[in-house]
Image (cartoon, rainbow, N blue to C red; front, side):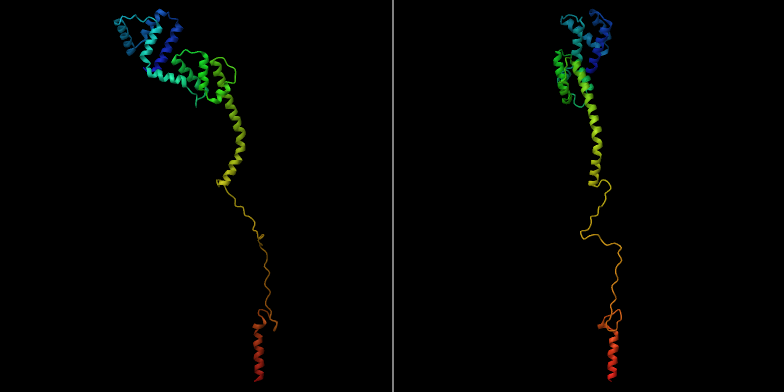
Length: 241
């Protein structure tokens, strides 16, 4: 039988015996009837062994329970459980989950200790962000500390949600500005004005004045290239002949 299953079975038996108010001298006989298969064989073998050794019969429930625990709870399991009992930490679990694990391990170990020691173990396993606040409040019992831890966790969760609501709207423009700088969003090219001044757009060009010859007063040529000059020269030469 698995040690955890055995411990659960033993706790169930204790609750039934308490509920039915079974007399102490009848508990062992009643529990023996409920033993099945290998457990029943083990019990019969234990009785024969004790008889051969001249030891007295087991007639009390506390003695029978110790023999059952010796049989079904290995020493290594006890060592691992006790380490967990002394070093249990909340870590990533909620306070409610930590309380459940803390109580379960404490019951399995069945260690009798002053309540102030239990309180110290519980506070030592809580996350510091919760434990530091709890220790500022007045408390007297383990239940007081557990209730305070639950309240502190809920208050911190509410404060976190309020903080996120106040911060998120301010962070949106920053994210948009970041995207525009890194090119994640649509970019706009901003043209800087030229240092030479604004360009002249769509201005009518003034036509260049036509060249004028000062000899013949014609346009399109100058005096040195005047075609009328040749005519004059030829006329003068022909008259000379």
